[in-house]
Image (cartoon, rainbow, N blue to C red; front, side, top):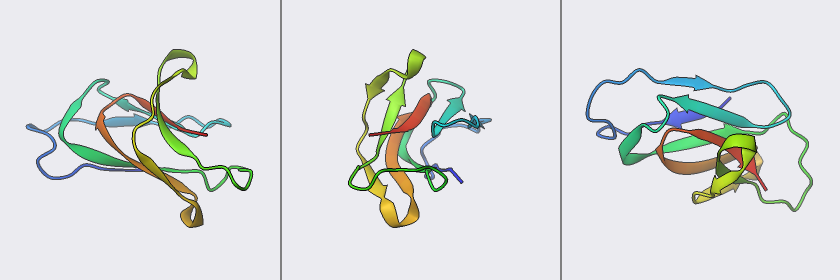
Length: 99
């Protein structure tokens, strides 16, 4: 259900991209090669359609490190009618839905 949209010109050369989205109570995805930088931001869409979310909570995209420590909250939008959080990312790492 998750999507990564990489615009033309974001990468200077062909690159093998791998994504890992474990099945758990957390909505997260990890991209490899870790640290890959984009010349133009890519759009990441994380789906939370199978999650129970309290009403009135705005969800965000979070760049997370070890122990799920939030390292950065990139600008993002909670698209409630689609049960998705969307945001622009500039590099590969681990991202999760946070509140």
